[in-house]
Amino acid sequence: MATHRKIDWTAAMRDMRADRAEPVVGYLAARSLEIARLDRLAREAASAPLAVAGSYDRSAIMTAAIAQARAQRAKGSKAAWSQLVGSALKSIWRHAKAQRAFAAH
Image (cartoon, rainbow, N blue to C red):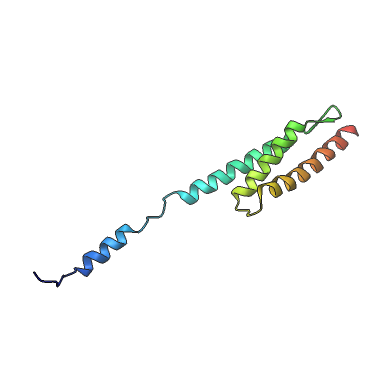
């Protein structure tokens, strides 16, 4: 038996190219749609009344903060979840205090 082996380089290169992972079609479109959905949810949550009858609606505040943090994470933020929620809570509480002050006047 001969130890000499013949390789068809054209077929080998074609097979190697075929084995490469194909880019996922629609990935960028799906990602941008998800970012848009999370932005819309964050805006809707922030536009909800955060201060009602002189007191704060803590459930609405937390919902708005989580929605804002999810939107930031979807946009590619590399910050830790606790940092994202913390900064979102600061922002939402500022907004809630402004709503309460505006309602009082």
